[in-house]
Every structure is written in C-alpha cells, then in structure tokens.
Length: 161
Image 1 (cartoon, rainbow, N blue to C red):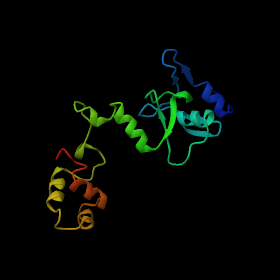
Image 2: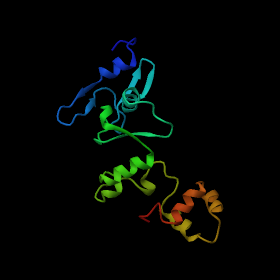
Image 3: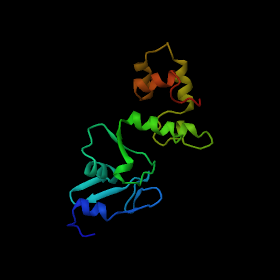
Image 4: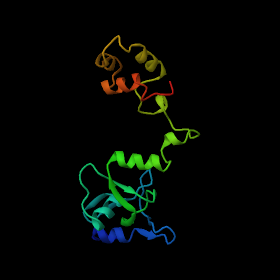
C-alpha cells in the first residue's frame, strides 16, 4: 500500500469478510495474541480499536474493545463492544476461554514464568513469615510489592505451591 494512503483506506484494504460468521478477518500484521495491527495514515495501534472508534464512536479511557465472536483478528464493528478489563475477563470466563478453565493445558506458572522474581522455596518462606513480619518487610526482603506478598499469603497467587 502506498505510504500516502489514509488510515481508513488502509483499514478497508486489510481485511476480508468471512461469509459464515460475519467476521472481518484481518489479513495484515498480527501481534503474538492474534490481534490485528494497523499502522499508517496517522494511526498506529490495534485494528479492532481503530474499527470500533471509526464505525461506532470514541473509546473512553480505560475501556477495552471486546469481541462477541472471540476472534482476535476480527475487525467487524458489529462484533465489537466496550467493556472494562473486568467485563472482558468475566466474558472470557463465562465462555470457558480462561486458562483456569482448562486444567489440562500446560500454562507456565510460578517460577516457570520468565519474569518471575520468586521461586517455590521463596513462596514457602513467605507463607511461613505470615504474622511474623509485616507485608512491607517481607516485600522488601524479596524485592516484590507488598500486594504481591499479601496475595501469596492469602493463596490468591502461587496456588499450586
């Protein structure tokens, strides 16, 4: 596509309608999670967000553009709705798409998550310190947030340990 093409023309030349589902399937760049990426004509961002704001209206701050069809590469504005991150997660859970609903799936957790600062030994020690030191003291010792310590001690995170 020529660099001078405006964002709406770029958008309209980047998807194909799928006749059975009504989805508009993004054919250009996708991120690792399958969401379309649109760049050019003064826009750089997610194609589904561009679609929503172009055809349905502005997207308020802190709002997600969610999919009724659950297909990340779909950019059909009729398949998109606004919701908070919590609304989006509830929709995900309701439809059985959340990782916690699939126990047979091997999702990385705990120290297998590449950005994890803690390991199983740390978690056991953190739980053993419950009531002996403040959350802030424990957090400082392990280089994580106070809220992280609270969630570990309340078994909201690292449940597998």
